[in-house]
Image 1 (tube, rainbow, N blue to C red):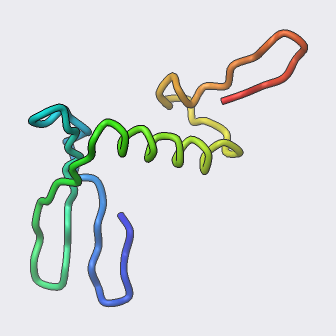
Image 2: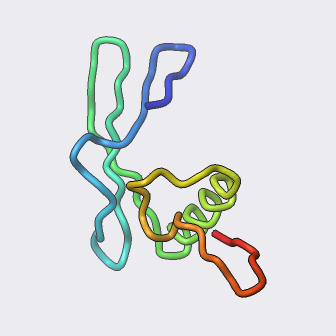
Length: 86
């Protein structure tokens, strides 16, 4: 969960993952904490926005080793000639 200087915190809602929403959109439930209050909110993304977020996260995580329980898209792929790509 990320923390802002004014005490707000935002992170994935525990036990809830990205899910298909209405009209082909995706919803990512978020847990929002601010001093004295807790709320649930959803980040709603179009397919294009979800793809852009996915690409940005893959790019940002590219140099990090994938944990053992990482999803398949984080597992390195070995190509002929020994090069590795995520």
